[in-house]
Image (cartoon, one colour):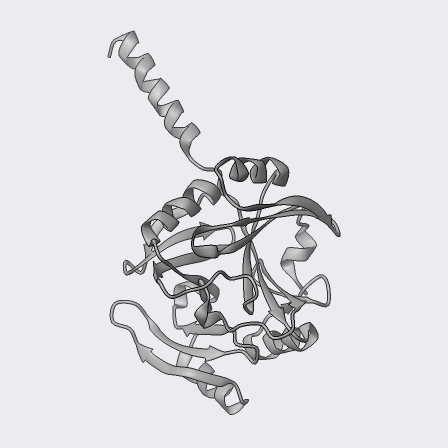
Length: 260
């Protein structure tokens, strides 16, 4: 290899690394509910969450589920954020126990060929929840979006928050985040509305510099809300493809992520 060719190769490698998006950790789900304390109790007792660092939240693994007071939230099924999913060891047994405890079952568990056994329940505020039997990834499993342009959305999330574009179980188009592990599953949906005002109100990523990140997103013509201080955090909002509301947070502490 000539020196000229070697220099060109090294330049191309450096350029490709530079073009790779920084991978930001997935941080939280935000729910709007009339009585946050009841939602906290429901997710603790029904889905085995840990208590969070403050009374309005719980933790699954290293993902926070935060609940804010919202009167009359719209159900998630009509939103661009259709549902969240949890993997359990035995989906039939779990759904039977939840139904006996008065939880609304939307669809009984069934085997999805090439995927996993799965069923659907609904929390008391209209939050749609899928229970799947995926032994390799127990706990908070994935977020399911429905958008008009799935391919464009997949690229947008990778470009702006990193992650690995993949197929969950080789079947479902998704972006995989590794720390914590969670899939963002994205499918076609034309009859959906923006997530603001629905029970699953928004998604959240932890970023290293919220001011720089929101400035970058605003420069691309995206709808953003300027950063502000909230407790120990600095936060800002951006509207993603299809009307997904996204919260960017800076300053998350380890105590907030581990629960108790």
